[in-house]
Image (cartoon, rainbow, N blue to C red; front, side, top):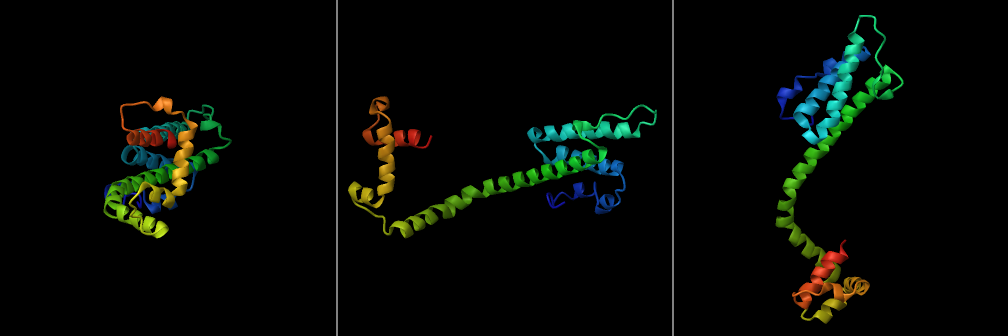
Amino acid sequence: RSLLPNRQDLHSHISDADVMACKSIDDVVRITLRSSYLLANYLESAARASTTNDLIRHLEEFAASREDTTGSPPAEIPFGLESEELFALSSVAFVFYKAQVCSADISNYKLGQLAPLLHHAVGCEYERKQLKEAYGDYTVSTAAELQGMLSSTCGWIRSIQSRFGSAENLTAQSKVEQKLDFVKGRGFV
């Protein structure tokens, strides 16, 4: 419910009373199966839902084999687990994990929506303030002053340039544009 507080239509599928009333493996499997259906059909993307759908298939086969009263031998426990209890517990843990992944996806989506607003409105001013606090007034009039103020950065750029020959950077670009493209391409890869 906390994953989707606004989707009241999904809240009624599983109640706290249903969970507390679980007394057997069959009850746990039924609740896990319902949770998995909701997860795969309403919350997860198609790419993420494939593993949940695989679990649903195994849970359905397991539940059907437990309901089979024809006297046939019990079906193999899915995923090669040692006991039915371990399968039920592992299934619940997997559904909890997948719900946490969905929660993280939702949070990342919301942050992704806000990031451009935060960066645009506040980010530039924040970066300028941090630079000013670290280096003082950064208005410089010459390249030599800038190199003196940012000596580590200049040294880093020189080390990148010295590693690669200038012959591979021959273009119609100006010298400054060529150096910037070189640093962007080689310095960050």
